Amino acid sequence: MKIILSAALLFCFPACNNNAQTNEPVAINDSPATVSKKDSLTTYIHTFTDTVLEYKITAALLNLPFVKKSNAYIDSFSNHKHGLSFMLENPAENINEISVQAGYNGDDRFETYYHFYVHAQTLEIKLYDPVLDKKLTVKEYLKTQK
Image (cartoon, rainbow, N blue to C red; front, side, top):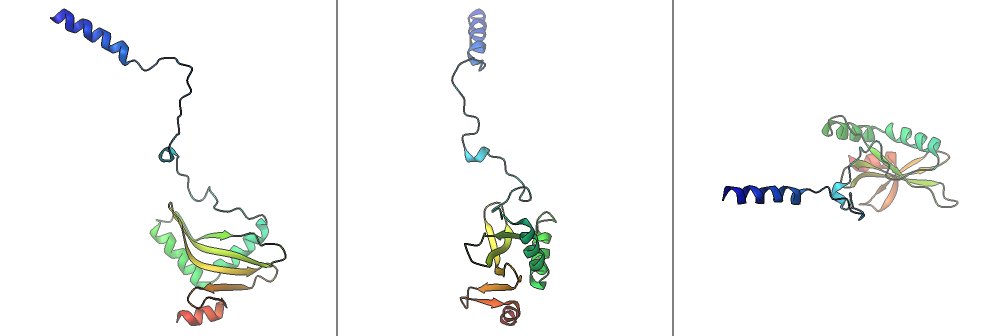
């Protein structure tokens, strides 16, 4: 009986060997769960073609007091890993207003806090107020928030 069990055990080990050399291709990353997640600093939601204008717009928006407060809030709950993110849209032909959404860029979605419209030449900033359904200047927006 011991000889039969040991012989069966010897035949089972080569059958479990998974190093068979076949010519069939094997899919390695076939599901979305295997895709590695990258840091939001290295990935971009949308690329904007004019980087100089993009820098000017984001710098102007980050000088607003309520944007600074939102940036500090996101920085605090993300343990100083993230800040306020901006999505700039390329303007259509002959349109000088650039649509900018500011918010938190999470792993699952982009949470919009503010929707700005910035004039490309003058850098005049307007905010879209969904309650009033219109664009407001910064002063008008601050009055509605009090």
